[in-house]
Image 1 (tube, helix red, strand yellow):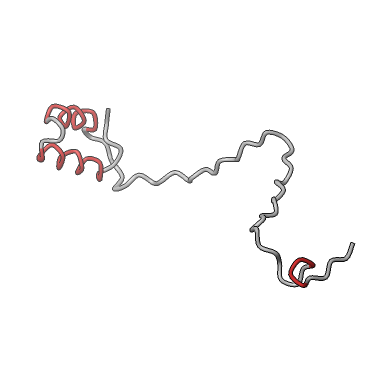
Image 2 (cartoon, rainbow, N blue to C red; image 1 turned 180 degrees about the vertical axis):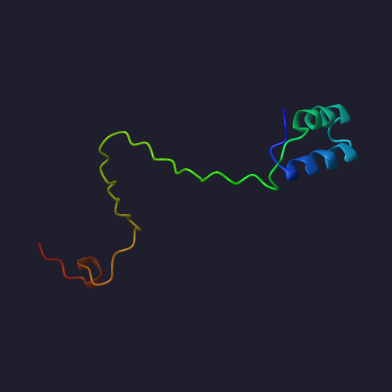
Length: 84
């Protein structure tokens, strides 16, 4: 399998010097890439956006009113005025 770019070739040789990959692997790539004109870097692919999956028509969720256990200011409970 040949190298895709000069940057990848340099990376493989540096990794071989550090002992992260074997020299045989580097030699295999060197043989496959022999005589090829490699670009300095490979252009990046454009990032694709993913669509959100929907499960049909969704209704908005209703918010529940929280009961704090404390009467509101100005309500009939706090003013002592109970009208029915």
